[in-house]
Length: 206
Image (cartoon, rainbow, N blue to C red; front, side, top):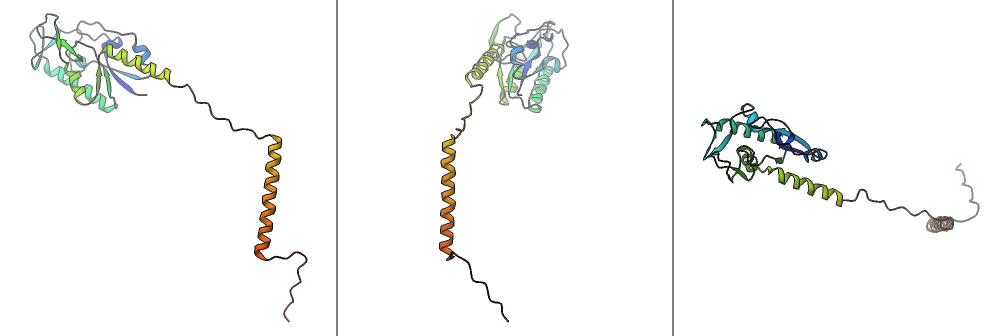
């Protein structure tokens, strides 16, 4: 079964910065068809839960208290890539707007709840290594498309039945086979120059 890396908060783990989760119910269905691997880059990078809110500002990741946590975010991203490589994972569903997992949007770095176009550290690293990254909405669309594909495939293909020969057909086949054997014997006798009737005994040498 193929595996998908998923932000742990989307699977109900309380690993958000505020100690809450972002659970999405559709993952219960997705888990019937794929092995879901929960992962929180921020926790994996060494940050506690709960923790101060963080945003990307320029090339750095800072907390609302002004502390730089770039190293922890980069460490978590590296571990996410390591897991994907080890488990041969080529898809990830990540939490949008996160400084680690944002796929298309992140906060602007001013802690004013304003979103801008951009990617979190983990999402960017995975995508740069040809891993397909999706946010939670795209993950749901992926599931819908996968289910539609399953429904379009036939459950089974009926095997063609071999026709059962009738009794008359069996009789005709047997007669044809008998005639073929007789013709083969006549041809063999003719080619070898065999003669019908008793053969003369060989004379013994004295």
